[in-house]
Length: 90
Image: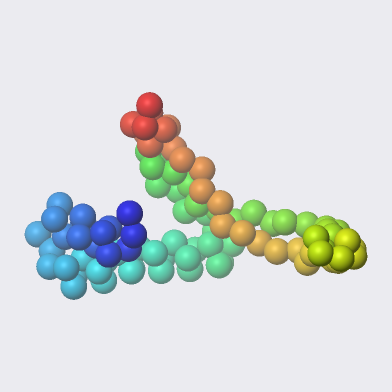
């Protein structure tokens, strides 16, 4: 499912027009992204938890030359599904 299909699904399950559903979907995504940027965790009970994980700097190799390269430390978003979501899939 892509963003447009998600907007259609939200619009179909509510009494919202597609333009309103699009704004609502964008607002949810923005709120989650803003919370993660601020170092917070977003917990949606029954659905899952969005969090930020730190990756330490490491050393890698260029696959073409075999030369060692430094990979910088970074942060990445993680999602851990909640029990309700896991149970609904099985």
